[in-house]
Length: 144
Image (tube, rainbow, N blue to C red; front, side):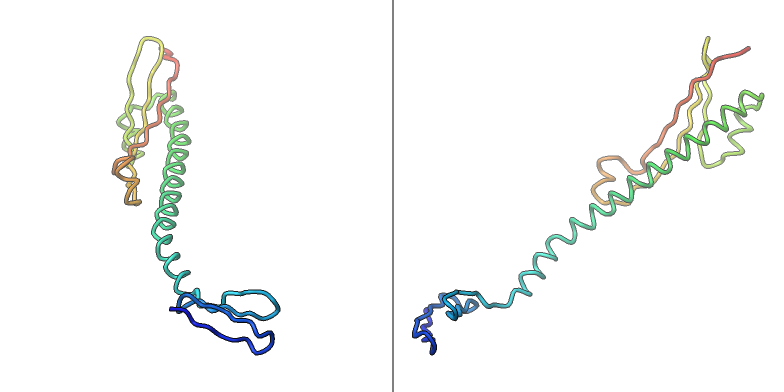
């Protein structure tokens, strides 16, 4: 549909090809005056799930890195306890939420700490697996 509007000041004819567009012909400039709130709302609704997914993924990676750092610090304590002569069963009873294993070798003793963490991001749990297993491994010289 074409709407012809005659401007009173300049005697110019302005054309509008759609209902939502309106060309204002003042000062030799054509400006589009229309309501764009609906367009912004639709764009926001399309981007919001992706934004929330990225936000949850960042939170999950932060929790994983925090738990890994916690296990790193705990491994220092476990190595100190083993060097002081504690049994692995006693150490496991002290740290009940972490699985601690000890493998004796010829030259080195391998100590593994592992813990499972649940991933809350919907797509990330398919990639990483749910629960995600965090493992820390330390090798200390076998002094006997």
